Image 1 (cartoon, rainbow, N blue to C red):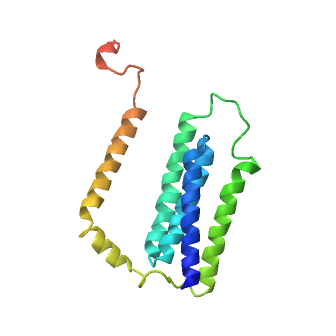
Image 2: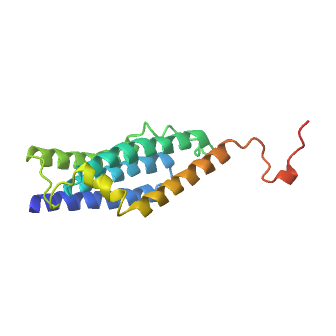
Image 3: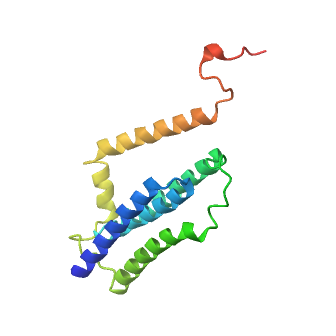
Length: 177
């Protein structure tokens, strides 16, 4: 039980540290790397609490899909274009922090799986069926609010991406010819 608690609290400390580093980085690429580490640490915490489905979804959806969208936004807006700098992806200093934190998380997961993969802090592993039932019964309001928020984000992204003129008001636009 102590081993599992140490793994959990180490992952929690890594999640807090990498989140703080993601917030305080001035370079968007560096912040994204620390954000990925934060998502991975939260996945380890879910796994240790007996929710392997939530851990897998954390890695697939957040650390995979959403961070890829963030990378596309950074590439599309080219936020670092004003300041000429060397390529931020190739610097060893860029990768040192996220690599060290990720190596700690990897060592934790390997040590848990080597011991049989038990989830010591949660009462029992939660099956996916129970997760689905609770999401669409007990927590249906939260699911619906998250869906509306995502829909608003998609509409806003479409609006920002499809703007053809620099005008922000229809009275200032040039008439069509």
